[in-house]
Length: 67
Image (cartoon, rainbow, N blue to C red; front, side, top):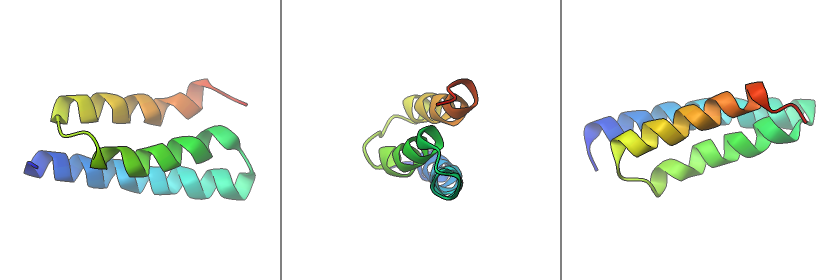
């Protein structure tokens, strides 16, 4: 695993923790699920470009999907 993948994984995990806590306190499903996925998916993706693309998509998803 490269240093950049570790950095991006840490960044997306931190944002995911924030989304998870927000979704749990406000009882909103989309940020809760996105937060869980953001915390877990860096363990399974080794390609840095794919990691950044999926992470950015998951971060922007709660802003466009309001359920």
